[in-house]
Length: 161
Ligand SMILES: Cc1cc2nc3c(=O)[nH]c(=O)nc-3n(C[C@H](O)[C@H](O)[C@H](O)COP(=O)(O)O)c2cc1C
Image 1 (tube, rainbow, N blue to C red):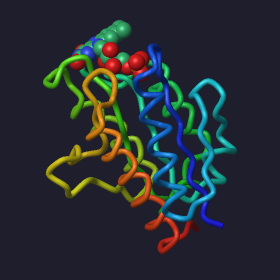
Image 2 (image 1 turned 90 degrees about the vertical axis):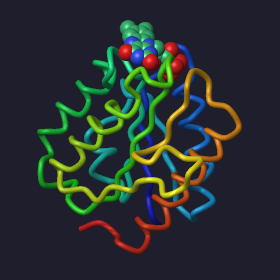
Image 3 (image 1 turned 120 degrees about the vertical axis):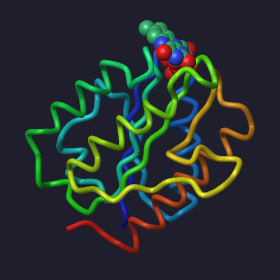
């Protein structure tokens, strides 16, 4: 069965709510879904997944140090994430507080691993991934669910090496 791993960092719960909505969507897309806080996720979790979705709050215009540390640590399994499907999500305090730069920073790490990135073509979604300002509202939760579903469906088609 296609496996989707969702790893997130959340200090005040906003990104955590997004992670749950992404998980619902990925399940809807037919995947076996694992959701983990960043301090509990392992390199083995990453290597075992067909699709990987990473989320962090926006801190000073980029991803939180906790998620950056997790991505940096994944250097130890370079080559093992190639062709896996990836997507990113974030919550920021301000609509122009750097949520897009956060998403792109997460995606940079995925590209360096040779992963295949899923964006959001919908006007209502975040084009580079799912975004909420503060706590996710109904629209943000829909965007999360749709992104999770797209990752699951694509991971099923592409598979992982
Ligand atoms: C240390 C720190 C830095 C932050 N920097 C930004 C920022 O640069 N831009 C922004 O829009 N929000 C910023 N915020 C707000 C968080 O991104 C926002 O509250 C987010 O919803 C928190 O997500 P969480 O509830 O999952 O922890 C910052 C918050 C903290 C604690």
